[in-house]
Image (tube, rainbow, N blue to C red; front, side):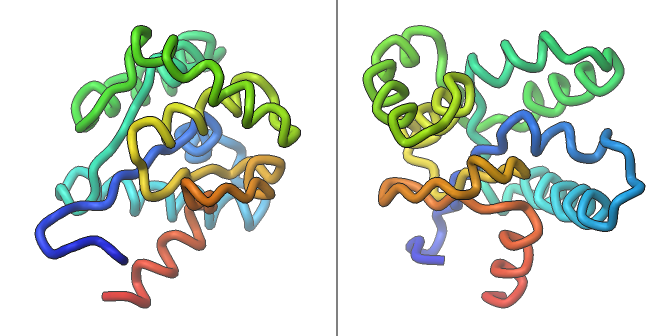
Length: 155
């Protein structure tokens, strides 16, 4: 979608997206989003997309109460991240995070978005309804289900 042949889209998945497959599956929405998120992960493994991670993702994941999911998420990010926004990078983008917070997002959510914009991501993938309302010309914010549907339609 919009990328020249041979380059891969950059994706940033936020913490709630990474955790979706570990959520209770009693709601249809959760089951569908979990399945779509796992499809995206498979495509990252197949090198169809570039994965961007950040110091913010690792920090949030370190506070994950579910030790098993935290270990699996960290292992996946370690193995497949193509680009990492580190602490030094993050210090440079604090003004961007503050700007995004003025649009009504919480500090950590704004920090994730700022990292994704800084890294030049094409998509910010989340299951958080508050974040999904964000409109910013610098990045497309989308849930995993819609992302998979759009990508399947463009094959």
